[in-house]
Image 1 (cartoon, rainbow, N blue to C red):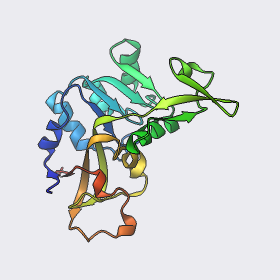
Image 2: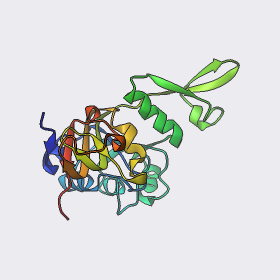
Image 3: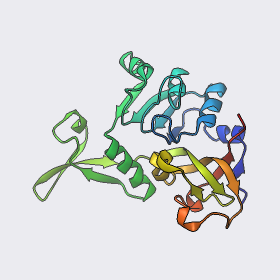
Image 4: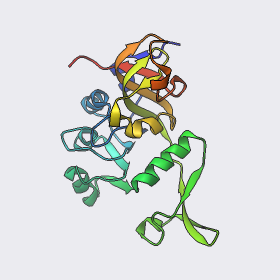
Length: 218
């Protein structure tokens, strides 16, 4: 199977109104070029699942500024004042989720689990509208799995099968998001032949990656 797409083909796999996971931590390890393509296309009504919304001029923040999003599910928005402004004005729905809980909800989707029990948020506003379960005399919140139509992740190198190698902290949410969407698209700086990657360095197996896109030259 040929997993290669060009940037335009990849952008066309993110239709308006879809739920999209986007990797990165304040832009580190985010697939920047596909974000730019979605902004240029004028994407609309996206639900974006991410760790954060970057900065107004960087990373996922560009999607917020361009009003491509109707909802954000993230662990924090403090580095992007436009996200907060739109939220307060009622122009953007924001669901703030504790970072560990967010990671585990994504992981549940990747591993076929319906949810995870956590004590984080018990007795706080985070408990509102959540199922509370008692286990061994301790209260837990049931946090349900987070699925997406498409996961947009970034890696350093892929082989032709889609096995992925990352550099340092660029792994962040990219790794767990790879298995949590119906389709996963990996944006990489380099594509090599199958067998050229050291198996010990492969972080995401190609079985989790549907498409690979080579980043365009700047």
